[in-house]
Length: 265
Ligand code: BTN
Image 1 (cartoon, rainbow, N blue to C red):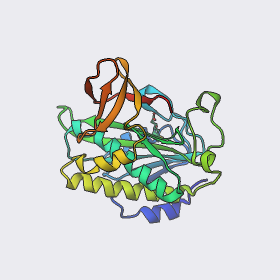
Image 2: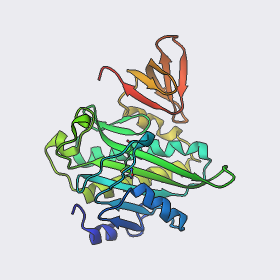
Image 3: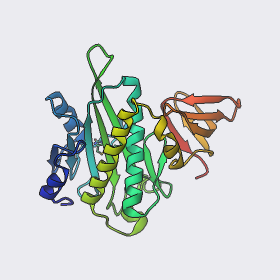
């Protein structure tokens, strides 16, 4: 067991993000738990935390390996009164908050890979999956689930992931305390979330810090979307999109969504 559940519950009590806590020794997916809790009327800030997931979800329909005690598998319920188009920025904010908290707690240097991965020494340490349910009219957010998977204690990944995934243990040889990391990450996200709402749901105040923690700004990347092309990553826009300069045409383009992979790393 990674967590002292009673101590964790006590530490989270009264927090805006992280309380109430739903803890699962084993569940299918904490994102799925939050979806059901949200439909039952759970308040903003509700946290689902699992020791093990049997059907952890990743982006693009991929599975997320989430074995017992290997990492922090958690999802937060948010009910922000913002336009659906602004919601993707919350994934960026979660990434920024987790990067800051992990750096502070471990002394390591995790870096952001836009839009929602955190890498350590070039390998994936954290994955974030945001899922959203809209009102029936489709013009407002009913709720948002921010799912976060942090590889903490993993000693070995399956062969197909060995080159691309890592854990805090594999990079440092140390076993960091999961409860402490979790509390630090949630506190930082809460701070960033409040700042975001106070700024009228704008990403602009966070842009400089996001870029400073970003791995690929100024570097060559391959943009993977409907088409795939090489480009130089120039900047993150005030709306949280990636600005790139295409190598084939020299034209600057804004990448709204899709995945950026890094070459030459
Ligand atoms: C990705 O990089 O593809 C996103 C991975 C997100 C994994 C986390 S683990 C906790 C939460 N519950 C899930 O089913 N997925 C997210």
